Image (cartoon, rainbow, N blue to C red; front, side, top):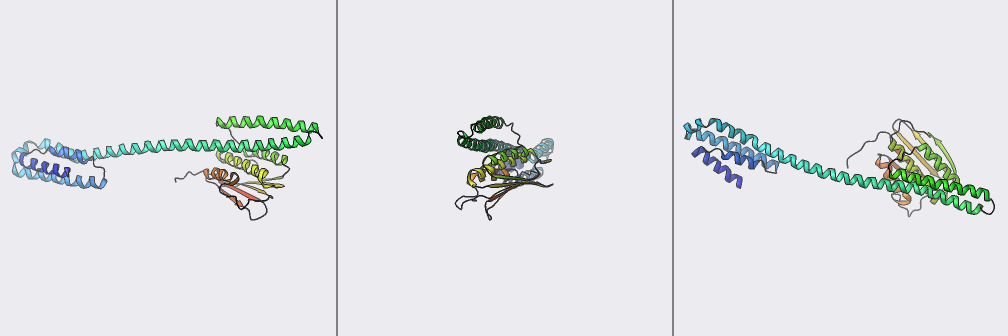
Amino acid sequence: MWLSFMMTINAVMAILYGYFYFAFFTAMLIGRIRSTAGFYIMYGIHIGITVGSIIGGFFINTTLYVEQIPYMVLVVFGAILGPFYLYSRKQNTELEGQLQSANERISELSVYEERQRIARDLHDTLGQKLSMIGLKLDLAIRLVDQKPAQAKQELKEVRQTTSLALKEVREMVSDMKKVKLSDELIQVEELLRVANIDSSLKGTYKLKDVPLIVENTLSMCLKEAINNVVRHSEATACTIVVSQTSKEVQLTITDNGKGLPPSVDQASGNGLKGMKERVEFVNGKLTIDTTTKGTTLTFTVPLVIVYQEG
């Protein structure tokens, strides 16, 4: 309504008195329109009225208009370029605001993801080490009367495991931990041995040309999976298979235990949710097979990490 009122004044003053300068103020107001469609519609109408008023004014008061041709050219250019300048400036300001909001949101999500990662790493690392400590202490208690020397050796290993756990926690908190799958395989093999579970390692122990985040993810998943085997499966044997192709790395862990109970949600039970989140973060997947006796976990991670939106 106000724009229509201003355009009418602009046309009347330009035709009757040669005051075509009002077109300048109307153009500035059009540049502040938020709607894209509204902007172009009002812009086109304004240009048409301005040019029409000037042409009409030439026929009514030719002498006056001829004298003001230089100013008239400036006004016409201002009417043409001014709205676009203000409109683009307004759009840039809005985009900068959206970008700032998006950056703040990304920062919040990054902090949240880092906290989740540290929480999972602490859970996995301490869980494995505490399980080993508990098993060794139980063994030492049984041996303390019959075989004091062996019990003493088990207690020494408990002390070493405790120091190692403390070291790993400090490294993870300072984001210094770099876990190799080959090193983790040695740790879990020792844990299975202490738990009186026969272990069998097959495949490629040392990965080649694998991104650090992929190897770290597989190592943490291996650690958590073996913790589940020791604590919950009641298994007597566990097989770990590592295979690598040019496109992906696959880690398979199979036990002959009692399997997952029907009441356990495979999406969240026994640390499965944390393992699933880890492999999905690097575009991998976790598959769970309970069709045969025991449980089989298969972690498949591509070697090329592609981050997708959404």
